[in-house]
Length: 310
Image 1 (cartoon, one colour):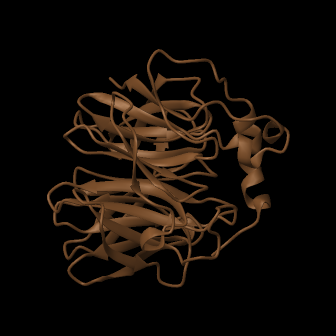
Image 2 (tube, one colour):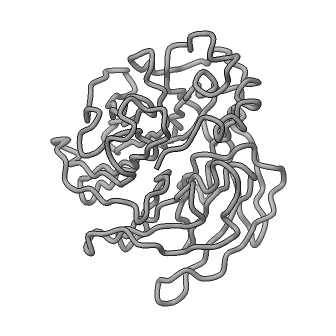
């Protein structure tokens, strides 16, 4: 499913205000049209980054040694968005969507593409029912994978043993203009997800049989600014990437989330991975894609920013 640039221009104003001051430690990524979006890491120090435009998945590490993990078009990759490592199954999951601006627009339908973590060979591909925008993923202890659809008001579920993606939850709370549900994380027996255009944080409880239960709209200490990537931390907090240029922690207690910024002035960040107590943040520079004024100039070298997250 494609969409016009007009859908994305609503975020251009916040992108144009981002301070691009250099940071203390960065990992430079190759290519002048990479426009990275998703990131994931494995415990052995491998870092995977997906390209929104050329559809490749890059592998790197903290030393900046970079190679191609999966070529554009392989296993239906069009525009790589969310990435997720499943070390127990030795797999890398990639959300592949079609934003209408990728080099391979129209080549494949939105899906979750799965690769062997060791060999990078394609293992499986699961199409989204009825299309949509596969944005981000999280995994629960039973191995189920939950997926946000930014164009439809729903959370999808992939049970690898059933070999298909199904609609797990659909609700009007998730509707809106442009990008809606974005990052998703599992923590303490519940799913959390953020809505990019409204800044809302949702808690989705499970019923006893594993189906979706009560949806809570959590109050936060401050408004989230274009929340994108969302992951659970080992210290019992959520870590959210905000398109306005910062990464923040969210400490959830009862029906309230305390938000505290841990890194600011990032260059249109989209997602973060945790590795050995550090955060690895993708700086997408999407303003050079979707803001006409900023797009007149070339982006800086694409990079991952390494930050302290506690």
